[in-house]
Length: 115
Image (cartoon, rainbow, N blue to C red):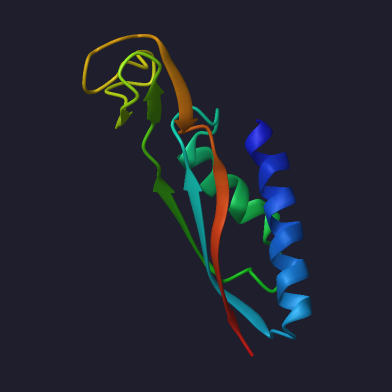
């Protein structure tokens, strides 16, 4: 389960932020995940429970939010959301000649700290 190593990396970032801001506690962590990131949100949430044990984030709320898949069409130049992760079609002209703009991210979007 690579979600555990991803969560360990997230916790390193959260711990560094908490230390930088001299926080006593991490209250909330928001992570944004694209459908093409190769990350299962429910597994990441389970891994978070393991990774945060004994840290300032032990009681933190862990929220995952989904990001859309966005593509740039090489035919009509439209930027649109792709209808499905296995069909990166243009939403304007339905061309499959597209470039992925977003949807493969795993982003630490927000960390709420308590001082």
